Length: 245
Image 1 (cartoon, helix red, strand yellow):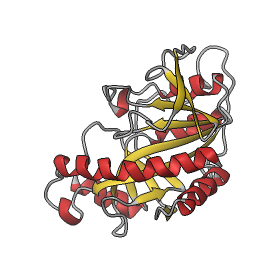
Image 2 (tube, rainbow, N blue to C red; image 1 turned 135 degrees about the vertical axis):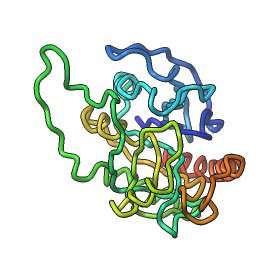
Image 3 (cartoon, rainbow, N blue to C red; image 1 turned 90 degrees about the vertical axis):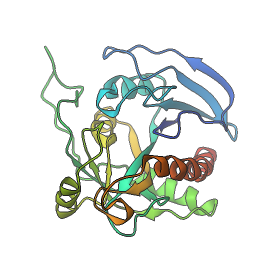
Image 4 (cartoon, rainbow, N blue to C red; image 1 turned 90 degrees about the horizontal axis):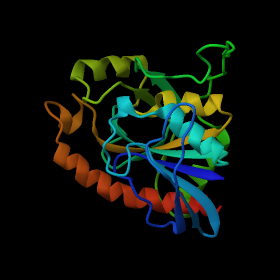
């Protein structure tokens, strides 16, 4: 079964039919909210907004372990995550959609593994390619099928938040090789890998990152809202096509 993890701007998925809400509890606490089970094109899908129904959970306080565990317990095998990001690379301007293929982790202090605590065994996962190639390809194919332009590949720099980055931090990230900046890829992607779930993301570029383009001196939060609202309509079409495939 496919799960859709909604990010900023995607707290609801109106295309779901025959919906019912499932409260979930895990050994790691409660997820960001009830899981919404429904159908798209006759296929069962689970939807979970990572920031909660009211967008009240900041990125550094999301219970990523509970979210991933709850989805696995519900029978999910694939997760399509939606994330709002800033564009570092020049080509990734506001409104662009990107399917990233790499991650650099700048977060700290987040519960980032299932394999810790009394009795836990030391476990290392291969994270050479942090996103599922098969699911990435399916997302790209879904975008082509509904005529939505989307970029294939990019490096997602995951920062701690909830504040936005300084221009100097973005300059450093660019030197590191990051093309996008967001706050939720980690530890979400790594936990999905630990849980044995396929995971890939659609990154929605809401703004130029700090110090870039029209964000050279400041980032307009009002402009971000307008861009995200429009871009999410395109994301919904891609997700509907993905679920129906």
